[in-house]
Length: 162
Image (cartoon, rainbow, N blue to C red; front, top):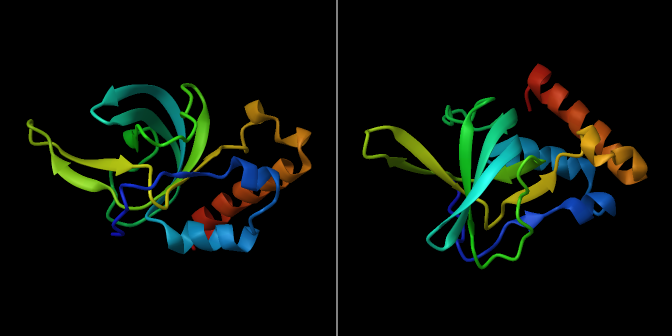
């Protein structure tokens, strides 16, 4: 497990995708080997908890994850914690995103249930899920490319592994 620097904020990649400032082979390598999990999520709400914003989500698709993360499955509800001081745009309720992250801090609730707490900071990456028609990727040529790329990459990983 990678230890995250809790003083750093997650990086938003929407502008990198729009400007084609990232390389597809590097994204594929990051997806397969650079992160503990890569998820498509839908935001269902947010709340303040101490010095964090807790973003409640439902997993739409697991693109890749480390083997021991059985809590990251389709339709699972997962909370992501973002430090209040981070200036990243708030993940909007009802919207879809792709999350690249590391870690997950294991804890046991008072009821005895094992849980993980996921922080979006350090080397985490957040981007809108441009494979969704609601974001109209065809309106921007570079986003249309990324729509095809992410769709094909996910299919490839599901069929052949990384």
